[in-house]
Length: 74
Image (cartoon, rainbow, N blue to C red):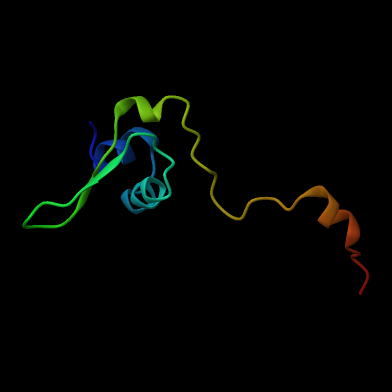
């Protein structure tokens, strides 16, 4: 099992992104541990990183049909 920091280093992403992705269920088998004292933390299986594609920076491109319906006239 890997920590959020371990996964962030391997994927080249921020720790907050890893926490968000884990909460969204993007890492199969990840579990959130809530100790009796202290802050909750995520444990992510190493196998969950196999084939994982992190999204690029910025807004995703619009679907083609939305682009075609718009006009650049002003």
